[in-house]
Image (cartoon, rainbow over all chains, first blue to last red; front, side, top):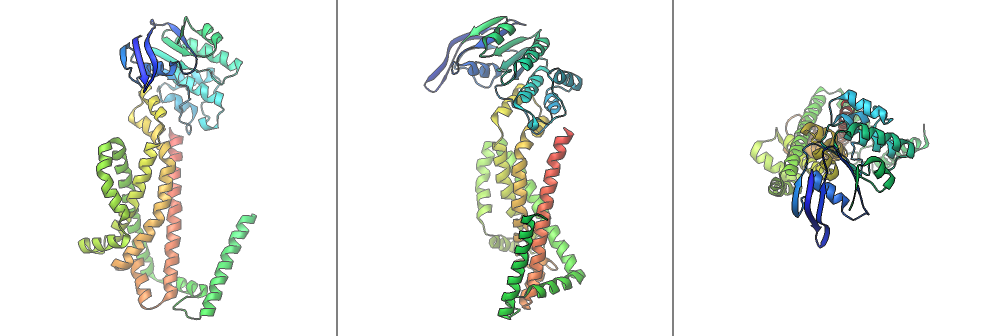
Amino acid sequence: MFLKNICKSFGETEVLKDFNLEIDEGEHIALMGKSGKGKTTVLNIIMGFELPDSGETEIPNEISAVFQEDRLSEDFSAISNVCLMSADKERSNEILKKLGIDGAKTVNTMSGGQKRRVALARCLVRDAGLYIFDEALKGLDEKTKAVAMSVIKEYTCKSSVIFVTHDINEAKEFADRIVEI
Amino acid sequence: MNKNKTHKITAVLLALLFWQIIAVILNRSFLLSSPLEVAKALFELGLSNTFWKGMWKSIFKILSGFLSGAGAGILLATLSYRFKLFEIYISPYITVIRSVPVASFVIIILIGLGSEALSVLVCFFMVMPIFYANTLEGLKSVDIKMLQMAKIFKLGKKAKLIYIYLPALESFLISSSVASMGIAFKSGIAAEVIGRPKDTLGYFLFDAKIYLETSKVFAITLMVILCSAIFERLAVFIAKRFFRLIKKVY
């Protein structure tokens, strides 16, 4: 996939100017940069939520994502939220179990860290050409983070990945390449 | 029994006592019947087959108007949410329906259609705008971020309805039911009093007024309040059950 010479402004504010990004099939990149530098705009363009003012894009059809917010259906169980994306209940349960989540538990009774892992499971249950993780490990303790990281690696090994993080160690551990924005 | 409940019961008993005292002081039962006279009238009504038949007839008509009004309100709100132009073009009708007094509706319907379908139509026009406004507000309150999530994960219409739209609509639909059930009963009975369709609660109420049977007026009013409260709770119960079932099944 690639983004070529992308420009994007919001009113008078120019967020992206001639931004380029190319990711090979199966490559894992970490996207890093300070707040307000345009990381979210890049992701929104990739996910089709925003159109660039100019530039070219080629993006896979099948994208799966963990957003900055959990974006879960809070009144439903974890397994319902995950099964939304795949009818494969066995795979859904398997991922939830690996992430230490009880699938029968209703999301609105869960802690922030648990909800984050449900969002992660929902993303991973789907076979996609490109996975986007926007601060996916935010709010997890070190032990859970390590488990989540290994689960992410396991399920995304054949796909391209954009991993947005502020943590350089996370980026180094996960990505083949770090892209600064 | 907790303290609050005790206070509530005491408040009701005090109100009844106050009512009885005023009735005794006035000593004009056609102006203000005492609680005991009302209880007697209520007992007599309870023994009358005609009254029960009339009550069920009124309830059936009011509920028909309520259900069709609720259904139409939800349908129109969905269309307005889906098609912006539809919302613009329908808004004058909704505004007019909302602003027209019940009495005007009654007279217009009486002229055009007679008294039999009167309470159904009046309830329909009273309930529909409430469900329309609340459903539309609920739909508009759906988090855009959840819709973006649905787009990325390519969720189907059914999944979007169950996981995104219905949870957003839950509180709006429940509050619509609460608000409109009371209004349906009030406007339905008012319509029957004006239109006087035979053997309905409104018809009995008007008759009681003509013969200055104030205790009977109070007794019928009490029955209307009771029906309204029961069906209001029933509507909320059914709505809550429906949403709980959806969450359980999916």
